[in-house]
Image 1 (cartoon, rainbow, N blue to C red):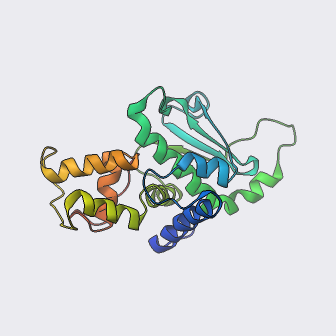
Image 2 (cartoon, rainbow, N blue to C red):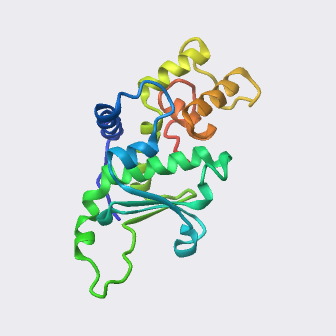
Length: 217
């Protein structure tokens, strides 16, 4: 599905508005991790669950949104209770589906309203997959998820505490050096993968890296 161009500032504002909406109802989020499951279910009131999406949508399926039914599913292989090492990917995928809801649901309204003539099971509005080569609609949802899970001000404060100040470091660093360890620690605090954290820090200019780095889940 084709989507219009969105400035990163627009995506940042949409993520901030989502956090603020939750904060007004349930209390401001002042420290990580962001309660992404509660945002999806309690504030946005979307039906959420874990399912084996790979059976119906292929081995690379991670999440799916049925906009007309207000339904989100994440693949059961990311269950953070059964597979705690997948927590970062799980949380990013939930944030990604929230991104589709907040940024793109208006694009799915017409299709959702048409329904099926034969009461067949509805197809998802969008199926989100792993890997590179994603279309713009997926990159926008990725960018939203990063900004939702790692809000700019919250992350800047946490990184300053971890590093004692905003001191850029080389991106091609060894994992055992101080900055690499700080990235890993901060990623654990925010409940995201080290890779997602590193890319977000680069995006904010808190560590040095290549411009235009993309998010991977």
